[in-house]
Structures are given as structure tokens and as C-alpha cells.
Amino acid sequence: MAQLKRRLQFEEGDGSFLKMTNHGEPTVSLAPQPTGYKHCFHAMVKPGGALCNLNCTYCYYLHKEGLLHQPHAPRMSAEMLERHIRQYIEAQTGDEVVFSWQGGEPTLLGLDFFRKAVELEARYKKPGQRIENDLQTNGALLDEQWAVFLKQHNFLVGLSCDGPARLHDQHRVTKGGQPTHDKVMAAAKLLRKHNVPFNALCVVNRENAKYPLDVYRFLTRELGVWRVQFISCVEPKVFHQVAPQRWDLENMPIIGSPLARPGFADSVVTDWSVDPEDWGRFLCKVWDDWYKRDYGKVHVDLFETAVAQSLGWPSQRCVTAEFCGKGMAIEHNGDVFTCDHYVYPEYKVGNIAETHWGAMAYSETQQRFGFSKSRTLAGYCRECTFLKLCWGECPKNRLVRAPNGEPGLNYLCPGMKHFYTHIQRDMPEILRRVKKDRARSFQANERREQ
Image (tube, rainbow, N blue to C red):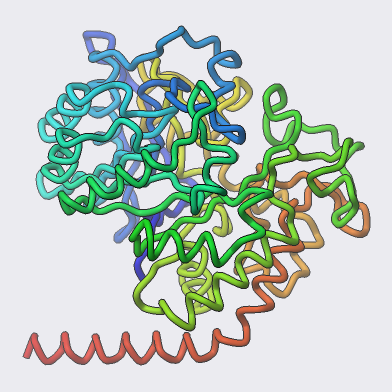
């Protein structure tokens, strides 16, 4: 199964210890691992902080400028960039190290910044190690020079697009409120021209969730991608001030009640958040179209992992994994946070100028964060038929109460249940085909080795 996000596993007891060089730079000694295990983790890099050239209504990151007291134009310094790349590579012993550049809008830093980044990656990579880069962008600043660079250095591009113009431009606008859909289409044309691999990052919100086939068919037939990542838009109304899982438990609404859906005055979520029921219907409609027309040709991340997990394989995505904690975030100034969606002061782990990346990634603090996903799972989830497909989804979305009043249930639960129930009709045949294809591939490899 192809995967849009590289799978990373977390092992309890994975330790390291910190020391400092004569020059005051932190280093790390990685603890020995059992045979077959590697030190690996992943981080979203925010080299320009929350700086962006768009003003998307639903953006979960723009407010970090004020929350984290960022300067007007934050920028990762050359010294911090080198420190990040060196430590990030030092802290990993796997065959592959993945650098993911995000924001804000990372292209605002300019090509010279990324030329320096790939130069440093080549300098510090270990023998036999493969370095990969991906770039998440709104596409507005991409031009011929960018496309040539991205192709030359084998970047995978995640291009943000929420479907056809009438849906995309409802939320994805410039600072002046102007539409951006034409810029996305121009960027896609440019990337195709230079054979730069790219996928679609689609935020499913309250509006476009009502048009699943319009969105899916546009992305795969008009935008021209064969890899699609659907991101559920779920934002509590207090997300500007209150960190995830620091909510008032007493005021959590019951799942299915008006307060647990968008569009109500006292709703727990913003008006643009996707309705849980609509999320389920969206996924079911897209699944049916995908299975009928695009199975084996288009990779949808949620579908890929549902199949993998139904086979008993690990989750392809952190949100549907039993544990998390291996997807961290680093800001322009070197501050490290437990997760890309937990960039709040309460979840700051440290700074790479003072503590080595490896010491933080494999720290007791980060392990507690990662295992708490499972340890804090609601009893309602533990009794669910689809527990091993969902694992309570992302803890940042555990905004509501279960029907019995227990707090900490995932806001998307009704939609996820609808989706998992729906796909059981097709899953036996899909699993049969996957197993048959794997057996055929195994036999072919055996013949080649004879």
C-alpha cells in the first residue's frame, strides 16, 4: 500500500542522554536499540513561523504570531537552520530521514534558503542514508525557478486545494480577501510541466463537505493528482487561546447534540468546522466513487490506512494509530513542540540551541505525550467495533462527551462510525485482492532470485 505519510512507530523505553560540546552546542548519545529497531521520528519545520501570504478563514496557525510573540517577519537564521539539520540527522538511525517544510507559507523564505538547506542535508547525512524533502504550499509563489529546483532535488509537494473555485475560494483568500484558486491551478500546471510529484491537501470544512463528488473529482480529474489527503477541519471556538486537551471538561457537550455541531451560537466548534455527520457522508460518497473508478490508481490517505489496518498492519497515519508522539514541530527560533497541532506554550518541549533534537524526541516528556493518546481513550471507544481502525482519532478533536456523559470523545465519532460501517461491504473483496497481489509479487521476486 502506498502511503502519503511515512509511518513512524514509538517504543517505550526509547532513550538518550544529552551532553554539550566545547562550543556549547548540544549533542546526544542514543540508547542502544534491539535488533531491527531504529531511532526515527518526524518533524514539521516552520522556518517562517506563522508568516503567510494568505488569510485563510480556517487556518489553525496564523494566530501563533500573537500567541508565541513572533516578530513581524519571522525567519529561521542560517545558524539555526544548520543546527536543526545537523541534529535532526544525528538523532536518527533509519535508512531515510524526511524533512517536511511547512508554515505559514514556507516559499516566502525564498529559494536561497532552501538551496542552503539541501546543501546542509548533503553535508550532514550519514553513509547509506537517504534524505527526502517535502514542501507544503499554497502554490501562490511558485514559478519556473522554483519548479526546476523542486524537480532537481526530488521534493514532494503538498499543494493545498479545497476543490473547485466556488468551494476553494470561500475560505482560501489573500490578505486582501481575493480568491486564490487560479494561482493553485497555475502552480499545478507548472509542477506537471516539470514533472514535480505533488499531492492534494484538501481541508474538508462545513461548506465543501456537502459536495464530496465535486471535490474528489475536481482534485483527481481537473487538478490532476493521484494522491489525496483529506484533512477534517475541526477547531474549537477557543483554539486561539486554549491549548488542546486543556478545555473545560464540565462544559463539554454530549455527542450529537446541537452544541456538538457547527452553526449554533453556543457550539463547541467554529462555524467553518466540518459537521461530524457530513464528514461521514463525505467519506462514504468519495469511497464509493474511488472504489468504482479509481481503485489501484488514486491513493486517498484515509482509505489506504483503513485497508492496511483491516489487514492488521500498522496505521499509515498518526491520527488513526494507537499511539502518537513521533510527529513533532519546530518553530523558526528552534523551539520544539510535541506535535504540529499542539504548538502552544503548554506543549513546548525545549529549544535545539539548548537541548539536542534527539534528547527531546526520545524524552520521557514526549513518550508520555505519545502514549497518552491510548491511555486517555474513552471507555466508549474501547468498546467500539472499529477501535482498531480509529483508536479515538486525533486527541485534539476529543471535544465532546459520550452518550453516557463520559468526557473526551472525539467530535468526529458519528461520521467515522458511519464511514467504517459503510466500507465493510467492500472490504472483504479489497483484502482478498491485496493478499492475492502480494502473493503474486512475492512469487515473482522468488523467481527473479532463482
